[in-house]
Image 1: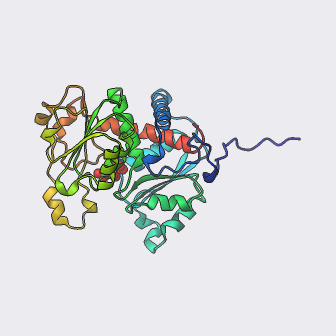
Image 2: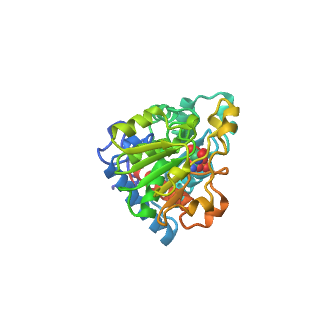
Length: 329
Ligand code: ASP
Ligand code: CP
């Protein structure tokens, strides 16, 4: 008598023996891991996820799989969209998203031990942490895939993927566009990841920030090495007329050691309906959110305001990524 297997789960490839090309078993730590073909693959899967959600709402693709969502910093969108993504694919979630003060982190448990504990329960771990490089540390300890949901002022790769996906969905292409990033380019991890990702495309880049919040030199050097048409300025007026994408960011108060400095720069930019009259008819205003005054609420009615569509795209991208790293897409 042959025994029927109880479950028909895909066996997750060992992280050290990943199949070339595919994303199964991957940690997602930095946008540098993605080449153009892999980006296209993720975007195509995300597009399918959108159609699936519109048609039936949820499927059983990740039934039986568990995601541990571990957040050492506040989050609304990233945590909620990963949870929604996992649930819409039929999986379940261990949510440590309401503050690690309620977990054993408050007793002094290290990141390594917390990760080694959660992987006993979960098939994939999403981590947000205030330290640059923390996601890499977690991935070094974990046998299961670790997805970086923001490591301090380092990277926010899944955000950049959803940002790029949004640009493509909204404007139909990425090549040929002028992308202007505004605000805190020094500490903003979303603009770090997005800039690196955009270097793979034929784009012009405009960086708008106060002097103390300029894009880090390490990233500017990469922009220069890639031979991009790129310029820095302090004034949104210099970029508003030609921008195809106006990507606005919050000044990252939590990263400042000197709060007086934060006070000096916190209200430098506000995108208003009046400013928008000078922008192209076909362009998009984006923001990773939360906003704290950088975009006037009256701009929300402008069809070019894409930030809430961008939020929704986050769920589709994260559905695609979860399915991919778990070997199901
Ligand atoms: N939510 C984004 C992040 O966590 C942007 C921000 O907080 O301003 O990086
Ligand atoms: N965009 C973003 O990361 O939002 P949250 O900080 O709310 O997760």
